Structures are given as C-alpha cells and as structure tokens.
Length: 296
Image (cartoon, rainbow, N blue to C red; front, side, top):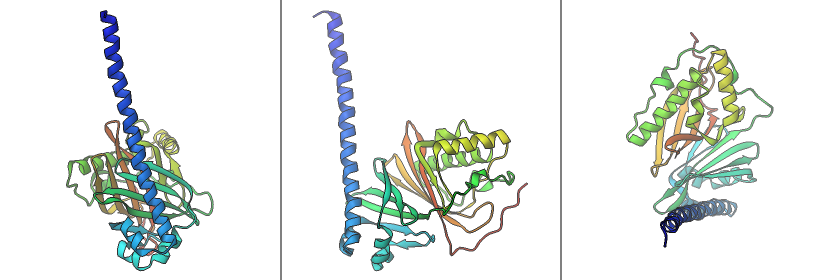
C-alpha cells in the first residue's frame, strides 16, 4: 500500500471517528432534552388532573414560582394551593425551548403573560427549579435603555454588589455580568455582544428584545455618548448546574425610580466564554417605590 493511500485511510478513520462522535454526542443531547421536555409535559398533565403527588415529584425542593404581581411562592405554598398554579399554566402558546446540558428553559405566553420555566438536572431526575411570569404590555412601550436621563454613576452593580461568589465558576459569571453592566453604562457596542448568547432575550413588562435589537440600542447609545447605569441590586444568588450552566437570581431597585423587581438570568459556557442566554424580570407590586437616583 503506497504512502498516500495509507495517509488517506488514517485521515478517514480520524475524521470519520470525530464526525461519528459528534453525531453520537448530538443524538445523546437530543435524547436528554426529550426526557426533560417529557417531564414538562407530565407536569402540565398532572396540574390538569390536580394530582398533587405527581406535581410534587416534579418540583425541585428549592422550587419557586413568581407570579405577574411579583409575589414568590415556595414549593410548599404551591402544593398547598395547587389550583392557582394549575390555572397559571393553562393555554401555553408560542413556546420555545433551549437546552443547556443540565438546564432547560421553556418559555412562551399564557393568558396575557410571558412565562419562563427553568428545569434542572438533579440526581433523582429533572425537576422544575423555577417559574417566572411577566405581565405583557397592553401596548407598545419604550425599552428602558432607550430613555436618556444622563449617565449618573454605577457603583452598584458595575463595581460592587451585595453578593460574594463562593466558587470560581460563580466569580467568573459575576465578573462577566458586571462587564456587560459597565459596557451598558459606558457603551461598548463592539464587546458587549461577546458576552451574550445568540438566542438571548431580555424580557420585562414593557418589552421583549433580542440580541440584535439590544445591540442596535447599544450602538445608538455609544454614538450619543450616553449609556444606561445598571439598576442597583439588593440581593443576589447564583445556582450552578454542572460546570457549564447556571441560574442567577437577583432583586433590583430601578435606577430611574419605581418599584423593585425580581430578575432571573440563565448563563451558559459556550465557545470558551460565559454567555447570557435569557434575562427576564417581574415588578414586585407589593414593594415600596423608590426615588430615582440623581444623575451627575
């Protein structure tokens, strides 16, 4: 066998093995995602039957549901008033899912609200970790980042937050997130997208923005030289799932004044860097409104 043929056969074996491994890996991932989506379907069926036992088995011990009023219900509270949670999960539409290895997001619309269900992998199987509902606007509204009120300062959250990471992974995620906050305050439309996943959505009660739409806003802000200080954080926690995905939960008071809000962010490690996949927030209606922070 001549040298050329030998090398060709070796190359074929190497690349064929690589592509085969990729196909097997993708198939395995598809299989896992099918399992978690079946769990989501089973949850909805159990809620429809008011089957508290079945629902309880699918809710994480740390499960929390935050409704459109910004009220957070624990697992015990949900099981104690299953009817309210069941009614909230009726009529899902425009459903989109994303798989992140040990985290799955199921997002869509139901009865005038945008919902986000986050499923996580536990030793006993997939469990719903949280659900967040955000009231949809009754008419088109202006995204907060487009309102120019002066740059002001951004000590919290750009430089400091009332949270200390306990793992290297959480430290890296926090540093990455603070970098995005700094680049929104001092607009850097070129680097900001590097920290954001392609499927990114930012959802609040006034709008829904994609990555591309948010980049346009960043470009406009950079051109004008006026960015948007981040909303100060009053509490934060980060939950790690495996070594490539995490859920960040935080409470904020709006920089421009108003009631506090609850925020959920899902992070994924992709292409060697942490990327924000979704950010959704809900106003806490029972919270006391705060005055706007004075601009400088």
